Amino acid sequence: MEMLHENYYLQELSNYRIRSLNLSHNEFSDTAGEYLGQMLGLQSLNLSWNHFNVRGAVALCNGLRTNVTLKKLDVSMNGFGNDGALALGDTLKLNSCLVYVDVSRNGITNEGASRISKGLENNECLQVLKLFLNPVSLEGAYSLILAIKRNPKSRMEDLDISNVLVSEQFVKVLDGVCAIHPQLDVVYKGLQGLSTKKTVSLETNPIKLIQNYTDQNKISVVEFFKSLNPSGLMTMPVGDFRKAIIQQTNIPINRYQARELIKKLEEKNGMVNFSSLI
Image 1 (tube, rainbow, N blue to C red):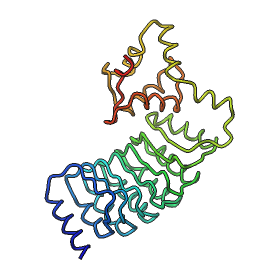
Image 2: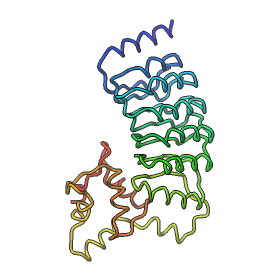
Image 3: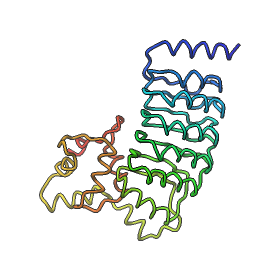
Image 4: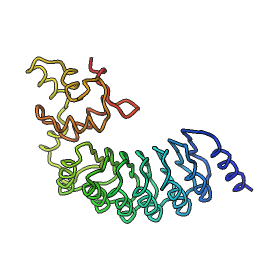
């Protein structure tokens, strides 16, 4: 009876022109995935903390393959596992709309990360992928960043693997990936064997570096930031800002410092706003 109620409820929802739907912390099970993936018209769907396992994950992803409206999908705290990750990878090969996917804490291992990577090799729209709190190690992290490297049309901006401890060799490879995709930021737990000297270099306050430069050149900090934006406006997309601040040659800003700048300037709509510096 509960399943009948669940499916009737979802079928009724599919008849409405809903754009954003938060169904987190419910008890939707695998059968619900068949309906949710077909809910055309949705732009944002939050299914975190439900009872989706492999069957539901596969059904949901199958429904999303040809979905042309959904931009944001949160399925964190479910049970996708590696088979669900395979379905997600297949979806990313075909879907041309999703820009944000959160599959954190879904029991996805290195095998699952490799399967998602297959989708990243061909995807041209995804910007944010959150995979933290999955049992992924350095091996899985490599497969993800190398997939992005192999995709010249990748728009990835934020890869969250913040429970993974990486090596210095990984960082060198990541430097090469970011040289191709300067808009990309990969968040990981930490670096093995990081020296004190390197730590100081990475943590140098980027605002102080910029203030020193602007003082020497007798311009305002706001003028410096506006010079990074071709439109000359006070706001710009996060990915464009990250790319511009790293590629500019006046001040040596690394990826970690760029991340700190974005934390200070980012608004909730995926834009940075320089007006807070006035």
